[in-house]
Image (cartoon, rainbow over all chains, first blue to last red; front, top):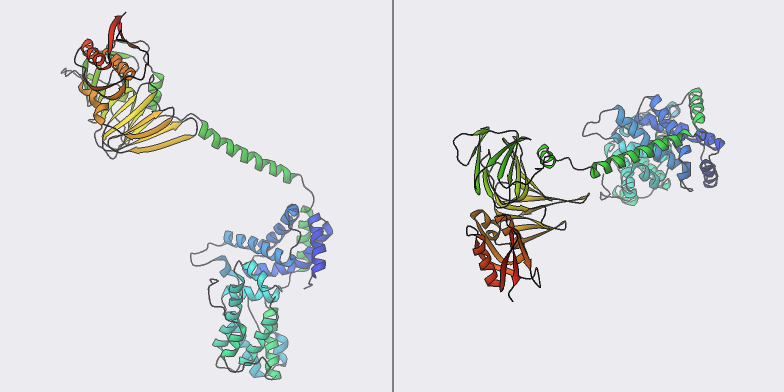
Length: 205
Length: 372
């Protein structure tokens, strides 16, 4: 996924506010797929997801005069899109009392095939177990991992999108890895987790 | 998840178990870590059919033109908002639709002045009620006048008109007793509705309401509606008086006032309290209730009452015009117990003696003057 540097981000956004058609096209090229995949996390019906994307872009155009001049586009789009998707989910499913829209977030982790071909059997086994453990994480922790690592957002931005505080957001992330660790005490994965933690902290902000 | 939850630091997590350094253990582990990273990053990367994606863009592009229908839409929104505001405004400003009984009372005002107490059944049928202190008793669908044995059939709405010089006692169908003072009009149904008992009063009346929690009793009077929760009280609401009052003897009542178009006020009274309505303002004070209810026993109790107010009451009671010709009208007051069964001259004697006044006949009435 192409990342827009801050300067490019600002220029693009300026053109968006000015209603430049080409800018909207660029915006779509850059972010539509990310939004589409994010939508799939909540709802399998692609027509609904496309409706939400279309709504998002036409709203953006029609209310462009009210847009604030300095935003992180990726963050802004994901946040608005999440709101639309949540509304759509609420319309299609009847939520029982214990369930919130957030709980509909779903993603499946699989050991990647490339690694499977070259990895030793013991490692393959370990990867499968790790995938299972990742899949067992609560929906909110999965959404956090998705926004942070797949959509490349900072903790602050993830917190803003998920409407939680930044400390809560960090806690949620560490808890995800800690859960992996406690569930996998039988196999020697601790050094592995140290590595992951290292990665996690580097990706902060 | 609450923000107050534990927030373990990365170092804490790491130092809890064995190796505290983040040094990679061995290349195999490093490789595995990278694999997990890829596993996380690669998840949820479904591909989107490029032609599908392109056709969605075409849909979007078609809408990204300055469109005036947006403004038309805005106009509809604004129009709807204005309509809603107008509707709310109209709802507030529209004259309150009173109950059918109040509407009837306001539409059928007695045309001529009468010197006899009259009972008007329905709209037209008028019956003269004899006697200075008459009594009516409703039972079933008929009304008995002055304990005559033959009840006459009542209509849906009944109006009792008590002229100056007369008083009346009426017992309504539910057992409620109303004493009507001189110069009063009471409109009431022959049989009350099941859940609401309503009467309309002009003038002065003393009410002894038969308790019935399931059917609250409302007295609609000039400027004030009294909601009754089973009790005895006096309402004085003569249209030609500057002040209206409700005096509660026992039980409890709730006053409903309407100030102009918007002001609505409710106030509950405690026993021995008087709600006094003057110039649209309600004042509640403690009073000697006897002073306000003695009239039904044919007495007038006064405590520093302005003389002109007393004369007004006497004018109504005796139906004889009384004037005060004094240097400081309104300043003279009178305190004392007047027995109104006496003839008027005797009553005037008492008042004049206490105030260094004299009275003389003038036409059909009397005028009170300062002593020379």
